[in-house]
Image (cartoon, rainbow, N blue to C red):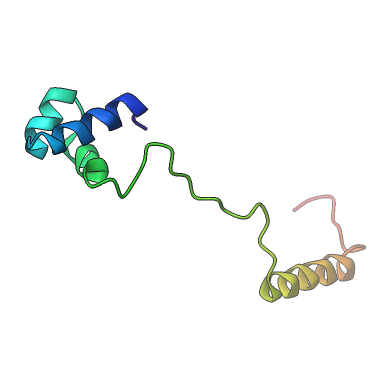
Length: 81
């Protein structure tokens, strides 16, 4: 992740007409990083908020089948594998 200062430098160099390659050289960042932030489509603090838990009908079916399997095989435990 880059700092806000680096982001500002990238945007400033773009306004001044510098190339992406020279901007990368001046800032010390990789050209891919400069390219990502060049047009302002990304900001340094972009984060994707993933849901903490995913609930789906498929997951519920699998959990129920596992619980049923464990219940059926509860008394079949052997001491050795």
